[in-house]
Image (cartoon, rainbow, N blue to C red):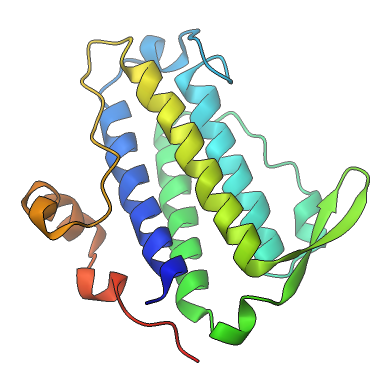
Length: 183
């Protein structure tokens, strides 16, 4: 199984589900000050996108591109579109992975210099980061009138009926989720 592709597809689906829930918020609720690592749903969602873009740029081998300031504060519609595009980039990247790629290192441009990280470890870090901050948005949604979406699923057969519409919207074929990592 290509674990990284499965994680990227689950990430895409979870972001889709979370952002569709957030789309029901008023602008005031979206930008309202809330308790969390970042002070609003908007700031947290923008941070998720910022970090996704930074690490994807590194994974794609673009050292100069990492210097770009990714910390935009975006209106919700633009954020939603940008996150969907970034999620698709991550899926495409993970689809292209070969077993031999996982131990290869990429450069990360940091404030204090360039460091090298293995691709497999960097991807695991990225997925953990996304899960962590989506959970914070989920908690913030609990302070609104919206019911936070279910995010703690991973393509279980018994739950398929609950996600069929989302899978159609994403054109997600679950056989694709479970395909093997090419040698």
